[in-house]
Length: 604
Image (cartoon, rainbow, N blue to C red; front, top):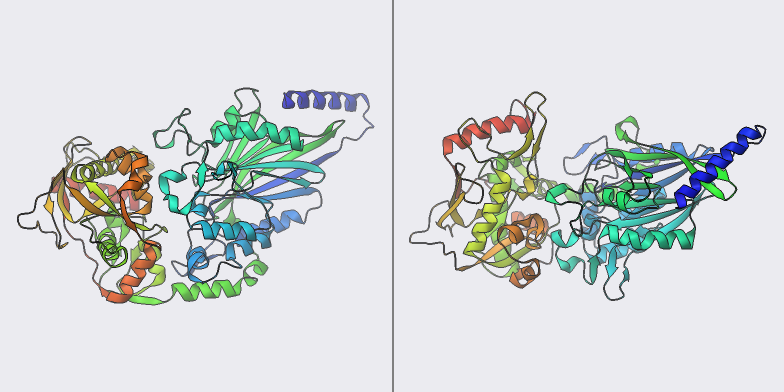
C-alpha cells in the first residue's frame, strides 16, 4: 500500500513538472556499499600463506573514500556479517592476544566508519565473551532482529537502526541465518535462539514503517539467496538461506543486501503481495568483491520517494589499498605475523588436502591421530573411533619446518573437540551418509569417483553434490566402501584398529549394538552436515545427551600444542579404509583429480 501510494505521488509530481516546466524537481543520489563474509581479510596480506594478496578491506576503503568525497551523493557503508573468523588475524585477537580490548576487527571497521553491520554465524562461533566485547566496541549498530535472548524474549543484538543521508531517512533491518543451532554447540550461544527470518520480518517491518516512518527500508541479512540449498524449499522452517523468501513474502523493503553464501548477487525479486520489484544484492567472500546499489530519490509533497535503483558487484582488484588504513594498524599486523611465524615442529614429508578428496590420506589422518591424542590428554578419556573431514580444498603443508600458520591450512575452523557416545549402528549410519554425499555409485572404471551434481565436459564447469568438508572418514576401525553398491549400502565395517596401524586387531569385532567413544568436532557434534541426525538417526535434541566431554579451546590450538610436544612428525595415511574395486576407484580418481585441480591434477 505504501509503495502504491508512493507511485501515485510520483506520477502526480511528474505531471505537475510537465505542466510547469520552470519548477525544478529536487533529486539526490544515494550509494550503498556492502561488504560481506570478509572473514578477517582486512589487509592485503595472507597470514596463512605469508604473501601479499589483492583482496582486502583496505582496497574497498579506497573506493569508499573516493565516493564519500563526492558532494553530490550520500554514501552508506554496510557489512552483512562473518568477519570474526578466517584469517589468523581474527583468531589472534579473539583468543591469543590475552585481551579482547581494542580488537582489530572493531578498530578497523570503526576506522572505516561503517553505518551498520549484520551479525554472521561465524561471528557467533568465537563465543560469547568475544561477540559481547565486539558488540560494545563497535561504533555502529550490530544487527540481528531474529537472535533472541531467551531470558527476556527480546533481540540480543539491535534489531534495526535508522540513519540519515542527504536528508533521507533510512531504516535498516538486520537478520542472521537461523541455521546456527545446526552448526555450533549451544555453549557458544547460551540463552539465545534464532527465529525464522520471514516470520521475524513480518513482525518488524510494519513496526518500523509505523514508528520510524522511513523514506527507505533496507534489509541487511547474513543469509543466502537460494532457499532451495541443501534440499530445503520455501516451506522449510528456519530456512538457512531465506533472503529471497523475505523479499518475496514480506512487503515494504526497498532494497535488500545479503551474505553467507559467498556469491555475487544482483537480482530483482517480485513481492508476491504487492507485485513490487525488490533489488537483492550481495558479494563474494574474503573481500574479493563488494556489492553496490545506486538509488535515486526525489523530493515530493510528502517526502522523499525512490524513483530508481540499480545494483552491481565490483572486483576489488581494480583498487589500490588505502595506505593510511594499513599504516594505522601496523602494530596489529606485526603482532599477528609474529604469532603465525612461530615454528612449532618439523614434517618429514609433504601432506595435501587434495589427496583427501579421493581416499584415505595423510592430510586427514594427521587430524584423526591428533584427535585421539587430544581426547586422551585434554578431555581425559580414550576415544575408540574418530570422525574427521578435510576442511580445506587445495592446501599443502611442505616437508620441513612447520609454523603456526600451517595449522590454518590443516584445520580451517575454530571447532572444539567433543567426545560422544555412539552405537555401532549409528557409526555405520554416519559413514553411509558421508559416502553417499561423497562418492558416486560406479558402474565401471569409466565413471566418476566423486558425486557430481553437475559436470560439463565442454566447459569444465562442475558442481559437487556436497561440500568437501562433509566428506567424513573414520579412524580406529577397518572398513571398506564398495563403489558398486547403491547409496546407503556401501560401507562394511570389518573390525577395530586400536593401534591406528591400518591392521585389523586380532579377534576384534565391531558390534552394531555396542557403544563406542567417538572423537568428533563441535560442528558435527551439533548436527552440522546432517551426519548424526539424518545419517545416524539421532534426534537433534538428543545430541547433547551423547556428549561425554569437550575441549575448552578450539581444536587447532591443541593441534599446535601436540605438534610442539612431538616436534617431528611423518604424515602418512593410516590405511584403515579403502574403496572397492580398487582399480575402478583409481581410474575415477585420476579423472576427477583433473576436473578439480586442472590437467596436471596438482592445482596448477
